[in-house]
Amino acid sequence: MKVTLLVIGKTEDKYLKEGIEKYLKRLKHYIKFELQEIPELKNTKSLTEDQQKVKEAELINKFLSPQDHIILLDEHGYEFTSVQFSGFINKKMLSSVHNLVFIVGGPYGFDQSLQTQAKDKLSLSKMTFSHQMVRLFFVEQLYRAFTILKGEPYHHE
Image 1 (cartoon, rainbow, N blue to C red):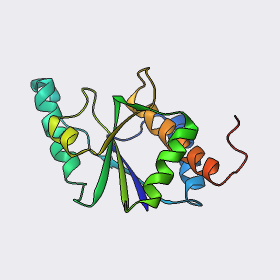
Image 2 (image 1 turned 30 degrees about the horizontal axis):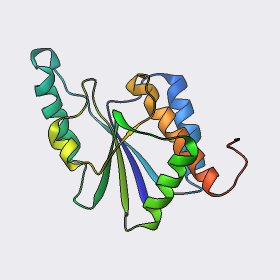
Image 3 (image 1 turned 180 degrees about the horizontal axis):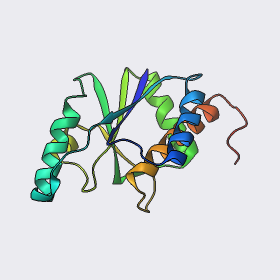
């Protein structure tokens, strides 16, 4: 199984880049993982929130294929503990899913077209985080999920 994290825009802060790189290196031991950055929309001041979501969905769709199992990282999604998330990942690995694609949307969330395509929605917290920080939190939790599945000592209960 391959896991992809699709994000809009580049990671800007050096400390976040370093943290993400740390976990990307660690993830290589467990799974094929790709962090795919999609260029940000330009001239968004003239667009309504809905227009912006539609345009972001169009950009995101260019990176998706019909075989992808799409999961939106969305504040209204399922909330898991780290152990539950590892079970979720394990279930996907044991099923026929070959491409698991997690998507971080823009500042206004997701267009209805993406919500329709998505198989699942996942919330990392009831709190709101910057889209930059979500990248680091997600790759750390994915790494943690694999250490839990392997029975390694990274995660403590």
